Amino acid sequence: MAKIIVVTSGKGGVGKTTTSAAISTGLAQRGHKTVVIDFDVGLRNLDLIMGCERRVVYDFVNVINGEATLNQALIKDKRNETLYILPASQTRDKDALTTEGVEKVLNELSEEFDYIICDSPAGIEKGAQMALYFADAAIVTTNPEVSSVRDSDRILGILQSKSRRAEQGLAPVEEYLLLTRYNPERVEAGEMLGVKDVEDILAIPLLGVIPESEAVLKASNQGVPVILDNESDAGQAYDDAVSRLLGDQVEHRFLEVQKKKGFLSRFLGGK
Amino acid sequence: MNEPNFQLKGSAVTAIVLELYQYDTQAFRDALQEKVSQAPALFTASPIVVQLDKLESTLDPSLLATLLQDCQNCGLQPMALRLNDEQAEQLTELPLPRLPALNSRSRAVEPEPSKAASEVVVKTVVEEKIIERASKIVTRPVRSGQQVYAEGTDLIILAPVSEGAEILADGSIHVYGPLRGRALAGVKGNTQARVFCQSLEAELISIAGNFKLSDALRAERWKQAAQISYQDDQLIVMPL
Image (cartoon, rainbow over all chains, first blue to last red):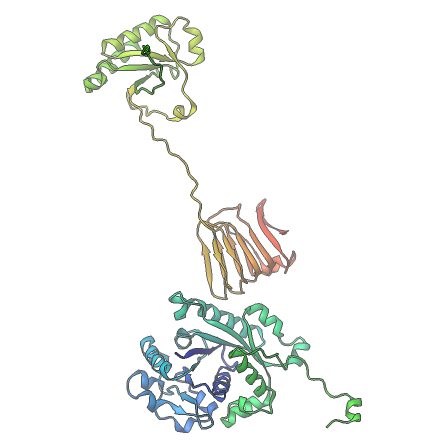
């Protein structure tokens, strides 16, 4: 049985797709058989971030409608043997997703994969609810600003009340907070909410803090998940987050302002 | 060994009570006869208690004798009188034994005026039991957009209540976490209800429909443990 993990947020533009790409790649790098599904029907993006947009033939909706088999629609990642992508349809809308159809696809994937990552669309409507309905765990992607935090709070409420686990009275969905676009300088200047503030409001375990980084934009445009950029702090932070997701205790990094090297230390050497 | 000749026992005997409100000799006689003729079997040789404590006018011994005679003529067997203390003083020599006055509970049962003077009073004693409703206990955070209502009872929340969440109770509300949303206690009008919280950061607090918004709440005990109650037509914030 695969573990189904939804990457969700409520608010748009906070980094759900970037996170889905990074987390799924990270899991696959560690040898877990992973599939990442784009639930954003009509606004297909995941294939771009994963760099497989030119290989999309069939999509998620085709599979739901029985127009293609799963094996026809799944795209094998170029970089990782154990990673597959199930792209969204660009020509349809969210109504194409049915509970029965999604369940059938997930059940079929469950037999073969260890992890199923569901990249949720923004909002709290049908698309988002479909993405989170079958989840065993949720990565709530949040920016350190009040509207994003409130939307995350809202989506946590929906996870508690409208997920399959909630409806069937099973153990609740595991919830993890992933704080993205974090800028310690701006937190220090009081322009941004700090990690503590967000943790205090959402009251869920912190999976990771991804610093604001130019590497993220560069990676997106190149179609390479940022986790593969070992040099960047964002890539390393995602790698830590994947370790924590798998149960490892890893200390949080990049929470403090990186001190510029002082005059003396520069003078005394180092690089 | 001698067998005992008798035994004294306490026993409750059902008897007809004739409760007299006013006494007009002829009218009483006619009404009684009519009543008895309706159900002769029930009244024939029935022992009755004549109850006079609700009688408005005074009754002298000769009138009382007439009353009892009329009862016997109708086939009833007066066996006792029930008098109040005043009447007992006036009627020094009673033709029948006097029963103690009724206890307050049966006095409260007011007979319907339309009913005739004598009737069997069947009392239904309603035993009042307080049926306790368990408080509603919530252990998970109440998130933005969620609503929790404790109907007919108290609401206890052992987690944060987020901004944009709404918690309601017919009774009091207790929040053992930061209270950032809206809390409405006593929603069915119970002004005795209160709101208790570990950290007061609410958007709105209401008790029985009287509310304060966060701007007004900020002045007192903001982000501190507090209880809010309704006193003298206004909400009072007090330390907890």
